[in-house]
Length: 454
Image 1 (cartoon, helix red, strand yellow):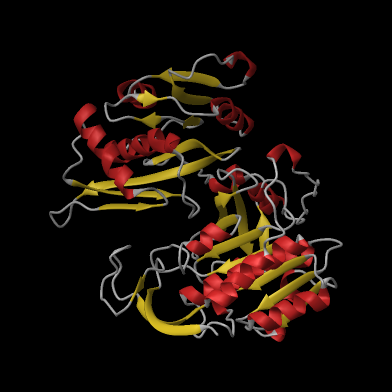
Image 2: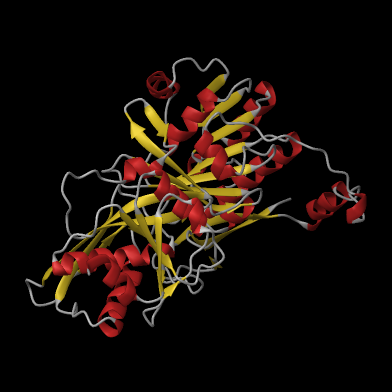
């Protein structure tokens, strides 16, 4: 017979403690321990479990037979791009994001648009009537999409057995609970048990599963890290709710690249795929403005041009402020130090504000040159020349370091009608004559500034 005891479990990392403590010794978080009832199996049940799996025998890896399972097309080009070409049968996909960012809208829109596939949409947060109202606004129809409002794991497994779907959606995993575990929904034990049960069903039936997960105030997926280890794909849906653009970023992908991103535009009738993000992320001004630079960035395999905006002003309250939106603040401070030490610009007593237009976040280090160019343009109040874009990583010694996929960046700038582009000098072996754009190569910040503001 199973034995049970009460322990305290950290809701952030899953560490167990026999008594309540204020600070977790493993992850360092405060007030995260919650009392849970843990059920321990006896030796009899463990031996029965061993006999049940005794039929599985080790085989040589060259003797393992592989059956080709084609990827499932989601009818959403941006989602297929991030997944690596579509959903793999039997895979678990975890989609996380802030509340109200559009996670449920993205997944429901995909479930309604997927063709010739029976979809079971399990919601633990909304009733079927609420889902119907959103579905009518997004994509009327959806004959192949079955909807049920349920939070019990055992009943969900029963619905899977009765309906035999081709795709399962669970919104959200933190609301699902099992009768076997005597703890509240969303606890470490419940998330581990429910995800493990769904994982076993997915692998046995080759059933692709999409799990929607909440995130905590730090921006990480709520629940223990074991949840991210159990699933095959982790997608982060991010963006500013005050802007219309959303980015679907791959954090983990066992079947594809983790460098791909998908860009969407939030509209009244759902999410629209942004096929050419450069035209939308660039502002079209009638007159030149200081503090604006265009960067040729690459996220995954996709090149696009973004607008970097900077504002430099005298510190009004004595202590200079540093603010950044869409760009790493620590890297901004590093670039300001490089400009002051290597290029001789006195910015220590001035406020510096930086913004990536469109409300998106860019991790490509090649936009460093655009950041320092926009800051200098605002500092001297001289606009950058029209028709010029830049790409380059700035090192601590003030050198312009080479960047990857430089040909794609040049091609994207040429396609959008830019006349000149400034790239690192160390990107060699490229035939620039095939592009209808003038290419300048620089090795230091001073050379780039002379070309831009001479």
